[in-house]
Length: 501
Image (cartoon, rainbow, N blue to C red):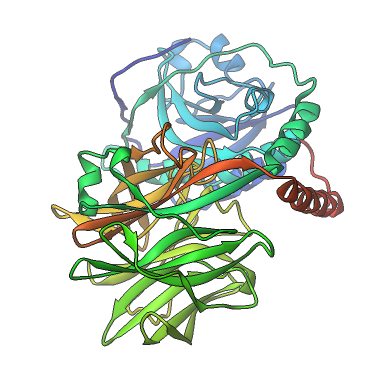
């Protein structure tokens, strides 16, 4: 294994970069062909494809997507090493060169880590791009399809960053890698089905919590024992307390109420003062589809709500005729997009929408849209999806500012859905570029009443509102889950089969 703790930097001063892509003996797979297509579209790059057994020749970058990367590089003299490194994908925390996702499924993990690295002549690996994807417990094939679907844009992004720099440098943290032996794949699918069935028995009980401190305090000191939990109504879960208005110490909340009987979400309103609910939650918005995540937006003289309604296949804005009890449809911001947790914020003269897509790895891929006005026209970011990482992509509440910086709460779903909140500092935000870094992760109190998840984070003056969950076993939930699983398996079986990655 090769490791190094210091960032590395390598430079090249030629005008055009020659990139050799090495693929496996059976020829390029669909995701490899898509990587090559994207690289060819980058101005300033010359792309050559070759099978793994063929010599690479002189190259600035060798991108090896074969099943046995580095074999040819290991035999080549150091003088022939690519100027900008030998690029390949590594898997898991240990940086395996082979067997993507197999160890993770065998261990029953919900997430699998993949990283694109550049390995120099000294065997030191520099991280270019990385992220975690959600595994499919009963299918190694489907998990790998998800993984490689997520990474097709990574080499293009890394190359674009290099070409944009005056001296064409590679910078980033060093990461481990190892030519680990193959992981036996026996019993992965069988054990995965057993785990999937066990997961379908889990009922999630959500509740709202109040912290009597402003939202910015989580950046420096967060203590989950400070959360004052509100008791949800019998037979319901109350989650997603995104719509929060604070007036003289009284919090008016809009949240999702989830009915365990019909498994449908509606938007409810409730008032809270001194950690106590002043009146029972009352329904204020119902649609034919599941509703959740009632994000509030103040714009002009009106207050708007942007709830998640993925089943409608669009992003629908509602206007308050009488807050919080009367909402009317205002306009559609995005058509033909099954939005998950759309969150908007005005920053540096432009409106930004951060959202996931229920039709495209909704816990893993982050999409960004931008507009000059809240009412549109909304344009997709040039690098959508701007992020692929189960640990910090899906929105988890309104963005907020602190000491001139912009922070974006996101869900960490790597262990369980809504397991923790990752607070990201936005480093770059423009129509053509995006970057952020995770500065802290807020986790639930293991000994508390809701120890299994911390899901959203919303600031309201002197208060911070969160939601958390606890798990229980439910035969009713199992029956519903098995029906959903069977429907998903039928859908997957009807799809054209692709060669295994």
